[in-house]
Length: 392
Image (cartoon, rainbow, N blue to C red):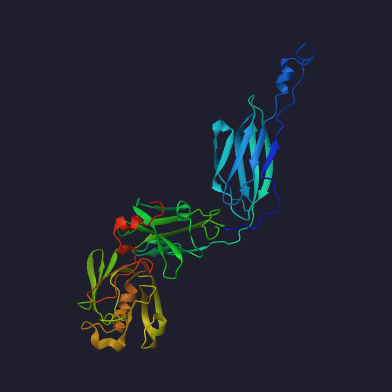
């Protein structure tokens, strides 16, 4: 269980008694002016407002006795408001969002007595700091345009053991009501990751927005202390098909083949084989240094490689490989990547987009790209993927 540092001593509840008696003119004479019915009405008991001072991760609660709540404003030091709603006939109010750790709030409550008199009270409280703060990394980047296979992907810095609580705070909105689902996977880094994948590839032109209202949510391994927002647009419908048995790569745009390139894939029969299944272009990294020791291959190589396009975290790329020229279109003799000529790599690199799917087939491979090894969610059926939701 997450341990929260004890705050300075506070009361569990702040009871705020409000006098709602208004000034009235007394009658000049007679029984009523001397304490009759009119005087009794002016001395009606005041409403009693209580603000329960919550711990981090709990909602703010306000109750009223002897009256009803007209309005509640709960605001943090940055001006962020906790909205809420009244219940129990207006005698109770609860915030929709939970109080965040290490945050100071002011509370303003307007209440009304049965005879219509209003009064406003103000109070403040501060929640304890969190021992551990969980942060996250979002992909794709904000305001980017990506291919039709890129999921909404969130990698968490600290473990998420309360996955359902976290998933409830994640909302994906699309411009065309795209059907999709969250799924929890273990990222190749070993960290927890949640991806939102459409049922089928995105429709080109779809605008996607993620609202992660996580401030004040306990992940089980740490607290979130802020909300996150991102959004992106889906670009052209491009699909790359790699046939390792025929040593051919084809690029189709809007269903029409626009390029066919002879390639050489991973060497059969061992650790140098390529992966099969659907991989997603994660990044266009240009010229990078590749060292086989970093991916566990014994016969070390160390070289700069041009037009590098990352397909998995485990090190499978498509890239220029002029040293393998005699094998393009004829045999698989690489160390696991999909190699092609400099000229083909240059034009292909310029044509593809991050998020384009690479549908890879071949008899002799290492296996199917796993969900967390890049974006391998497309290798699960829709039914299998939906079961990975914490809310399934």
